[in-house]
Amino acid sequence: MIPRYTRDEMGRIWQPRNRYQKWLDIEIAVCEAWTERGLIPPESMDRIKTCANFDPDRIDEIEKITRHDVIAFTTCVAEYVGEDSRFIHRGLTSYDVVDTAFSLLLKEAGLLIRKGLLELLEALKARAMEHRHTPEVGRSHGIHAEPVTFGLKLALFYAEMSRHLERWNHALKSISVGKISGAVGTFAHLDPQMEESILMRLGLDPAPVSNQVIQRDRHAEYFTCLALMASSMEKISVEIRHLQRTEVAEVEEFFHKGQKGSSAMPHKRNPVLTENLSGLARVIRGHALAAMENIPLWHERDISHSSVERIIAPDATILADFMLSRLTSVIRNMVVYERKMLENLNQSRGLIFSEAVLIRLVDKGLTRESAYAIVQRNAMKAWEEGTQFKDVLMQDSELLEHLTPSELDAAFDMGHALRWVDAIFMRIFSE
Image (cartoon, rainbow, N blue to C red):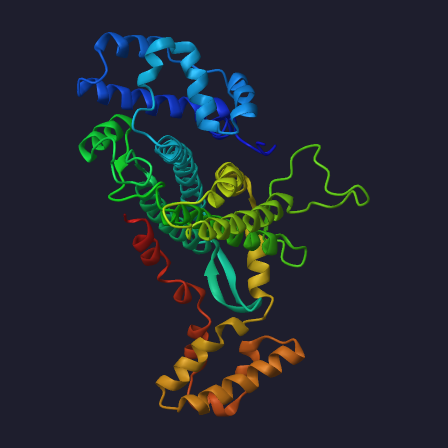
């Protein structure tokens, strides 16, 4: 069953009609190869190509009797083709068709996911450039650390999603293989050159070696890449959720006219889109584990992987496609409160420049331990008394023996703290 949240293009890939069409494309490609070998008369090949068709409902009807989906399919096709159907499926095992078609479906879905990933990267880059120099407090352990910019945060997300694009390109290449090698992969009734010819028609490479199936480490790589991608989308979503908290209020999901946040509290504007993304990432990670469990099969093949893939393939690709679309929309439309970012940055009254003061004391010849003790006792005093850190430092006679007031002022220079932002952007976006 196709999940409710789906973009139509991705949903159609996993409909039975598209799957059966892939099966038919493979069967016809095999027949064409046999025709080239002189085994199928050209006039029979013409009739096969003209008449070959299927009816998904009829396939279901036949399968209730045969209890075998591929036999039900070939029987249905034979009803359209007639006597020449005797040439169809020659030398093949079911999974020559099913697994090769599965690769075609995963490749088709994967190209849509790649398109969505590129759209997300474009959105992240645009907002990163927009807020390249928008100052914001950096936080570690949720506590104010040192200044950053909001654009730098987005640029980091861009770099991470770019790595997913590299991984995804490799996963697509890895899954874009087929097998037309017979019941246990030995080419007992055809040959490797014929397989290459057939798969070239379909836009796939031949698996260098197979048994009855294409090996499931390829599929596990595909679904693991989706899980990694989803995890990074959750990471971005969690950051937005934190920044939308009332106590922070630096970023907010766009709140549409007429939208309601709570049935009880009319004031609520909740980060529901990113919360949803966090939940969906958990599902895709579970599918990746299921794909890994599919790798060990009995001997040349058992059927334990099949039922799993009927669930995880449409689910994971549809969810990933939806997540990319949703997060792209969130990034494009999120509201950024620059003034609130500056207010929060100043909330710790200059404590975020403590390392700059520490380094200047060390540069004056103090040991790191001595310098740390001076800065920390003043930082704790400013923290506990709620006073400006610089004012407290200016009253410390021991510190003033080493730093002049102007040198102390320089330690609190925001521009100095963020002077390499453009250089970092060059690293990320120069490619």
